[in-house]
Length: 192
Image 1 (cartoon, rainbow, N blue to C red):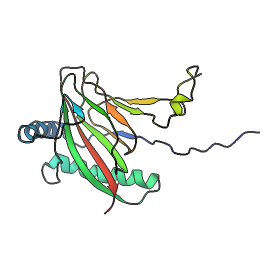
Image 2 (cartoon, helix red, strand yellow):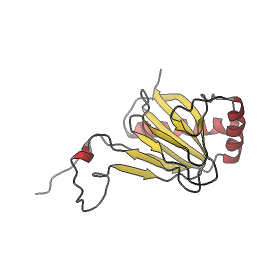
Image 3 (cartoon, helix red, strand yellow):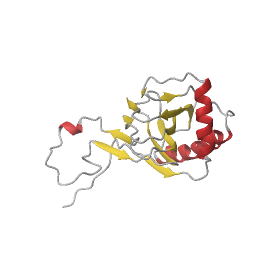
Image 4 (spheres, helix red, strand yellow):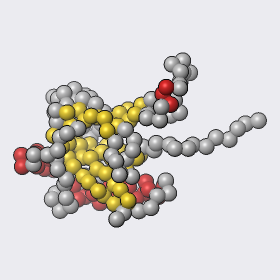
């Protein structure tokens, strides 16, 4: 007898590499913005996070928002959710040694990050298992896989886009190279 299996409560992570955005333009905008914006760096240890970036402030950011709206709409359809809308979008600049502390995004249906300039070393995304399954799985695993993993690492790559549930705990590892990592964080919630 072979038993049927079903996936309940999965944590889906969508990923792609975006080629249609001018990352140099976004990097210039990020540094210009940092000069004029005190930011909100509460969870960005040693780095800087901008205040909310609004549509119309930068052409490449607007292109990214259009792309995000399209991709997020596809994601929500895949998992059977109602329409969502962009709640917030901000820029992160992380120099050597800085990192983004573990967090979730309350009230967000989807969250994500786009890497406009990935660090050459470090700065990877780490997603964490928080269902307490890690306490019940033994150390004597035959192989690490989606079912028994305690975390998932996604590499920071320039042009990489990652979308995930707003309740999925994550952090961004410390930047170990001399170049700044520049990323754009965003959250989507139920359509108002």
